[in-house]
Every structure is written in structure tokens, then in C-alpha cells.
Image 1 (cartoon, rainbow, N blue to C red):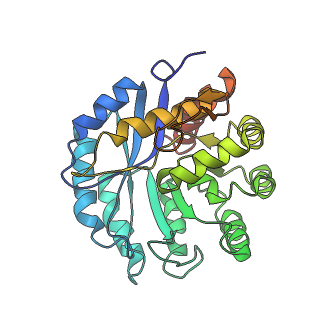
Image 2: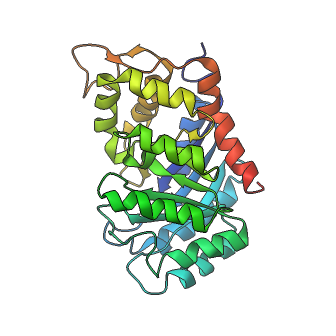
Image 3: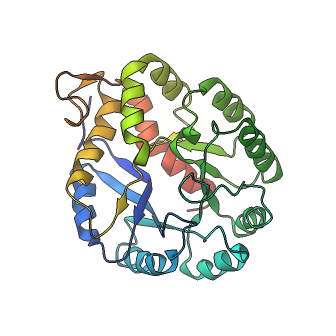
Length: 289
């Protein structure tokens, strides 16, 4: 087994804000052998306002490190001009659109809202993907809205963040993956970090079976917000999000497991290689990158 630093990786979900010294993250990438990262700008929690300043900064970072960074653009979801915002962002030549329209701290606008749905049509036209924060388990109707979106835009690659925050219902996620070949999941944890660590510790076999069966549709990510306030937590969380997949038991982040080892997934090499590298690379290939 190759632990932590040896296995090549692509991180499909990470945030950045204006002023963060990206060379700090380059050192993290080099430490854990992360070849490339998909970056997106983050605004305020209410509707993603103010993202434009951060998006402009992200473009500069991408241009400085073109071999290490792929860029998403985003929109402020509560405005009526979402399509125009997205079209303005196309000048940055992104790989796709990042939407947080179903993020509980951003907004509860559904994917099929008249402000949002035209964005997917433009993604189709541009050959771009869409990274979605869409929480499936909040409402039963959210599953149907996602199904309709996948049906209406079969040529758009959709990457659903945090397993759709639907890890409690792997059988329904499996149904979607079996039916729609344009759907992928990222297994980033971000603000759900504590919950995911605990749930894997409680039910490692459940997670292991799902990750193994659908390793060609699951991509690794971390979903942290890198800002001028970012501490060395960045390094710690990356190590834990790698260890929990690679090892059947691990010491974990001391904040959560100070008295004992936690149960991880201990995935086999083939599964790990897919989740960390092959599946993210396949997503890029599907959109012609």
C-alpha cells in the first residue's frame, strides 16, 4: 500500500478567496502528491454575494499555476441575472460552473428554478461540467429535481458534492448512478467533516462497499475555503481525508479521536487509484480537457 504522500491525486473540490498565498497550498499539494486541484471562488454565505472579487483573484492564481489548477466560475444565486453572470465568467475559460443553490447556508433555490436551469443549457453549449451542492436528503422532492435535471441535460457532466450529502441512502444514489452516466460524486467533506468522520467510524463496511462498487464514479476532494485566515488545519484535514480512505484504522484528527483509533475504509489499491486519480482524470477527459 502507498500511504499519504506516494499515491498520485487530483483534488476536485477546493475553495479560494482573495489574498490567500497559493504557494502555501502548493506545498500541501507537493506533500500529498496532488497533481492538480479544481478551484472555485467563494462569496458570502447569503446567496454567494461578493464572489466576483475572489473569482478574479482565482483567475490570476490559475494563470500563474496553469498545470496545477483548473477553475470553476460561479454566480450569486439570489439575483435575477444568473445567466449573464455566468456568461461574464466565461472569459476566464473555466472547466465549468459551481452552484451552491441548494446549500443550506447560501440559498434554497432549487436546480430547476428559472434563474438556474438556463445555466445548464449554456454548460451544454460550452461543453462544460457543473459541480453542484444539492442536498438530497433535506426533501424527498430534491431527488426528483436532480433526476429531472439529469434527464434534461444528458450531455452535461454533473459532479455532485459531498455524495449529495445523501450518504444515508446509498441505495438511492446507486439507482441514479446506474441510470445516468453523466453523474459523478465527489467525496469531499468540508463543513460536514466531523459528521463524515463519525459516520465512517460507525459504519465502515457500508461506506467501503459503496466506494468500491462505484469507484469509477467517485472522485476525491476536500472542500476547504482557503483564505487569509487559513491555519495549519489545512494540512491536518488533508491527511485525515486521505487516511480514512486508505487505512482500516487510523489515529485521525485528535480533536475527534483522542482516546482511540478510528475505523477507516481500508480500500484496495485499485479502488484508491480510481477515486484519487483515475476518476477525476476521466471527468476532465469527458469535457475535453
